[in-house]
Length: 94
Image (tube, rainbow, N blue to C red; front, side):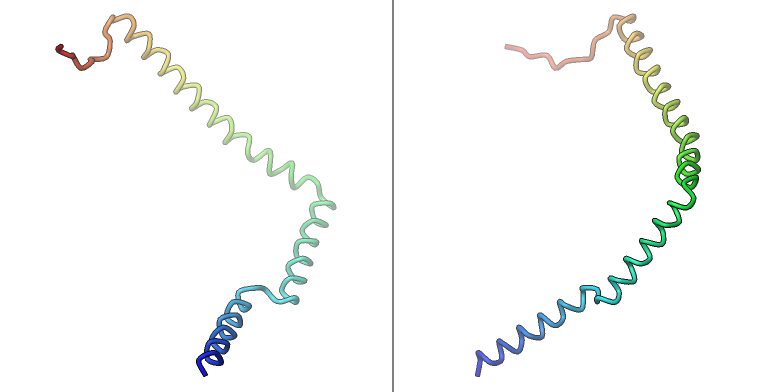
């Protein structure tokens, strides 16, 4: 009797797991939707170019911020060298 109950429980578990997978109809619909998107891009290749052109201002802004960070790093390092100070180190008394 316990073996039958275990098999039934295993069947319920497997049935619950298969609900997580999309059905064949859903998969076909998703593929059709993706194909329509690809066809739209093929008809109008300017979509990708427009998207890339929209990225240019963001990329320039990022490059400018990196340049400023490098300048601050270099100038800060030179100021530290100019003052002749080194970072404090723990003194070891032997």
